[in-house]
Amino acid sequence: MGRIQAFDTDEVVRAARSVFWELGYEKASLPELERATGLNRSSIYHAFTNKRGLFDSVVQSYLEEIIRPRLRVLTADPVAPDAVVVYLSGLRDALAARGTLVDNGCLLINAAGSPISNDVQVGAVIANYRTELDAAIHAGVVAHLPAGSHAQARQLATLLTSLVITAMTLARIDNAQSVYSIDTALQLLETAAEAQHPAAIHS
Image 1 (cartoon, one colour):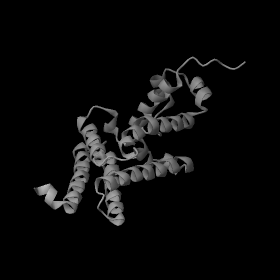
Image 2 (image 1 turned 120 degrees about the vertical axis):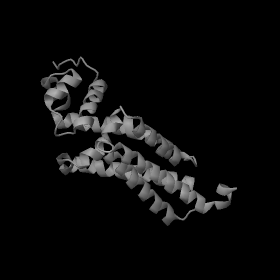
Image 3 (image 1 turned 60 degrees about the vertical axis):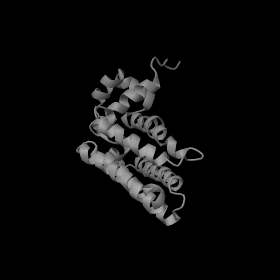
Image 4 (image 1 turned 180 degrees about the vertical axis):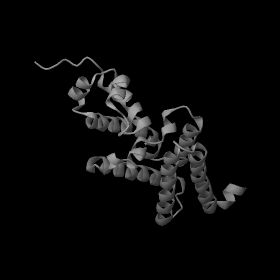
């Protein structure tokens, strides 16, 4: 007869997510994960096979509960003209607020700079996340600047995506520069809008 599970898996994954997000995969020890989740390692192994299995569940919860809700404004149908500004402004506010897990940057971008990224599956998840982020921002740029060419939208989306990734990379070590990266992204959008509609902007 199988063991009866006496805990909420989603709550356990969220608790573990905080540990992995703050410490990274390599530094997140089993004792730390036990303390955070309230489970002993036997229960963790039974539910998730091993630490890596728990991390995989954390990554999926991070995408579904943290990343995609924030991107939803850019993945709506249709995308609102101000969606990309709303997205970037919200990210800027979160970075500037301090005192939250966003201070630790992005769990996936942090993982990209650590040994766990050498794992083929983890590397693929990180690459797919970057592609998803870029596609969402590109859709926002197209909606915000409908008169622009495809090449211009593609170039601006690439720049904005890079600035978002830079901001999340710097969040752990230099909050001011992290916020400045998003300010730069917003300024690039404003400059592009002025180039398309100078009379409307300055009237």
